[in-house]
Each structure stands twice: as C-alpha cells, then as structure tokens.
Amino acid sequence: MPAPKIISQYIVRQFLMSFFAVMLALGAIILLFDVIELMKKEAVSSFGFGNILKLGLLKLPNMILTILPFIVLIASIIVFRRLTKSHELVIIRAAGQSVWQFVTPLLLTSFIIGLFSVTVFNPFSAAMFSRYQRLDEDRKGTPHISSSQGLWLREHRDGKMYVLHARGIHQEKYELNLKNISILIFSDQNVFLKRIDALKAVLNKGVFSLKNARTFENGKIIEVSETLDIPTDLTLGKIQENFASPETISFWDLPEIIAFFENSGFSSHSHRLHLQSLLVSPFLLMTMILISAVFSVDPNQRRGGNALKVSCAIVCGFLLYFMTRITYALGFSTALPIAFAVWSPPLIFALISVSVLLHKEDG
Image (tube, rainbow, N blue to C red; front, top):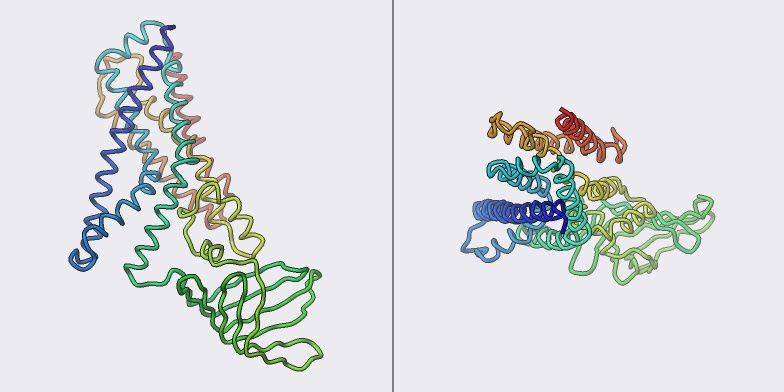
C-alpha cells in the first residue's frame, strides 16, 4: 500500500474519532441545558421528568444539524494540533507530502458527512423535530393550527380557480374547522363566476363541507344552502406544512412542498431558502476544514502561539456562522437573492482560506 494512502487513512481515522467524540460531548451539553430549561418552565411533578427528557431528545437531532459545522471545525483543529504536538505533521511534511495531500482526505470526508447529514440524517431530524413541536404544543395547550389573521388558499380544479379566505381556523384531531368563509370562483381566463359565503366549514376527506352557505352569482337570485360540499385536492397535512417551520420537513419532501405552495398561492420563500441551506451544507463543512488548516498547519512548527491560532480558527468559524445568519436574514427578507445569500459566505471564506494555504505552501 502506498505511503500517501496509509497517511490519508490514518488522518481520516483520527478525524472521525475526534468528530464523534466532539459530537457526543456537545450533544450531551445541549441535552442537559434543554432539560434544565424545560424543568424551569414546567413542574416536574405535573409534566413528568420522562416527558421532559423525551422533549429534549426529540429536539436534539435538529440541534446537532445546527452545530454540525462547529463539530467539524473543532474536530479538525484537534486532529491538526495532535499531529503537530506529536511531531507527526513534521514527519509527514519531511516525507515530501504537501499540505493538500493530507487536507484533501479531510475535505472529502467532511463532504461525505455533509451529504449524509442532508440525505439521511435530515429526514430523521425533521421527523423528530416535528414530533417535538406537536408535543410542545400539547404541553402548552395550543392547537396545531391556529391563526387570528385567517387563512388564504388558492386551488386550480376542473378548469376553475378557487380562492378561499377563512377569518378563523382551528384544528380538531383530523379535521380543520373554518369560520366566516368566503370562496371566490374564477374561470381559467380570470373571469369572476360566483362567490360563496358560509359561517362555518369543515375540511375532511377531500371535501369542504360548508354550513349555512349563500351563493352569489351574476344575474341570479342568492341561493341559500344549509350544507354545501365542495371537493378539493387540499388536505390537512398540506395546509399544516404552511404553518410548520421548514426544519420539520424532510429534504426529500421540500421540492414537492415548494411546488405545492407556488401552485396554491402560498409563499415558498422560507422553504426555498431552507432547501438551499441544506444543499450548501457539505461545502460549508469543507470550508470549516480549510479554516482549521489555515491556523493549524504551519510550515514552521517552532513559532509557537498554538493557543492563539486555535482561538483565531474558532473565531473565524463563528464569524462565518454569523455571516451566514446575516445573509440568510437578508435572503429571507428578499433583500438578497436566495442563491447569493446562501452560497456567498462559504465560498468567500473558502477562497480566502485556499489563498492563504497556497501562500504558506509556496512560502
């Protein structure tokens, strides 16, 4: 087996060991603080310590995904400092290995971790976080769907467009109750056809069941109906997605949900932003590897200042994180295009890190 391959496997093995150790340590700390915070809000005797611990565990996968870039950053710093302290890095460099020959395996490993977190761990995290939100709402005694400002829906069906506005909504088990409903029906050419008003309506099994409905149509007498059923392709689950945070939706379901929102008149902006943030996450992890390499890999290992270098690496990692939060906020407010808001911070930091590493290697 060639020496470079042995060195790469050794460095990757050291990185994975540090990665899982850091993840377990930070995960335990986060769980501890979440449980303490919940115990402050709830009396353990009334809610039960088991339920509090369950809420903390359900929220934990989502928190792990949030701090994943820092886990990679800290793990890579540990690996590089360990190699430096044991003089293994000096031996590797003396053997003719360039910085890219032992950084590239870590870049590939972090990219694979990012892909796994998006395609496999994210669906699991979304399911757990969705369950956490439902249990938290039950704990607080709030309904799963509630809005004082009302609900707007738009649907294309049978060559017509239906626009529904409900001034009050409330979920009961598997039914959605609506109050003070107005339904406007248009043709495909956006010609107004009729309007239906009702005091109450229930969405159940693909049908809006209206109570005390009045139908207004041009040139016709007002038609009053005690009950009126209007078929629909909308379901409680699809409407729930509009009120759920994007973190509760699986990566694989996001494209379908985004398409549904755009066809039904919902705003899909936050979901498109979340989808792009998931797509960029493998590259964000690679950028964290480059940042740690900039401050941990030095051609002259005798310069010292290790604590300062580690501190600088962590500060740069936090700077990248806060920069992504700022650009995400600007993207969410439509001040920046979504793609630019999501992709620009890691690309900028990656280019700067590569430039510094090239300068160090040539120097």
